[in-house]
Image 1 (tube, rainbow, N blue to C red):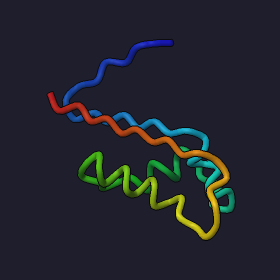
Image 2: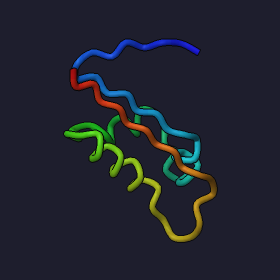
Image 3: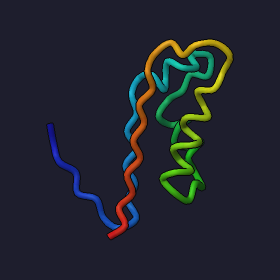
Length: 73
């Protein structure tokens, strides 16, 4: 439990371990995910990029939860 104060322009990205487990061969680390999001211009684009990283043939091994929050004011 804790608190975070966001300021205008800040972005908070939360995701479940299902994002990491979806493609174990990619070794998705926080740093790799951050690089993949670099240059995204909206929360929607970030969400699309993250979900796009999980695409492969066959069923997903775990549920995937992603939340992107942008502070606009």
